[in-house]
Image 1 (tube, rainbow, N blue to C red):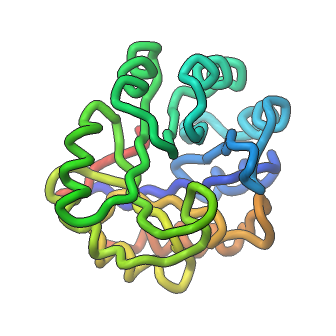
Image 2: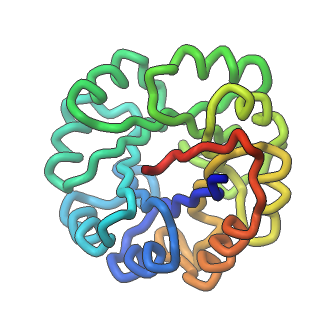
Length: 220
């Protein structure tokens, strides 16, 4: 049976990225969206990427950036998984996959509409469901009714995000049926700076959680 996978997103410091990976995180996220307080430029991203051990997936997070720029950034920094957090179309996913990248598409729908939208982006390697509201793309630390994503677990494995922290992670997993979780502000001391103790607590909770038989692998 697969265990719950964990992505820690919004890393800005190489040493903290390395610590998260060594604690057992399956993936580390780098945000290439300038309005975000967790934004990293190419130089910062390269340093963080170099600190991440082999076997841990580096994910570049983009919001409505032209696909050519996404590809250039990914190749320069050296990662192969792209997370699309804006209004990107299935054609963007097709282009990225044909360029050799894995693609995670973020959806903000719930219930039946989530199933419909997921089918529209069937070409994506993974779906991340994040239905909380905020001024910026992303969870913004806001919780939501995670059970509203549960229907998707009967169709395909998915990543859950939005308002997750050490006190609610088990409830969120039980309600949603997610195969993986994505955390940022819920394990931070300040934007872009991670509390490694909180990361370790989350990882232990994910490891101890007994997932449904349908749970799949998101990060290879």
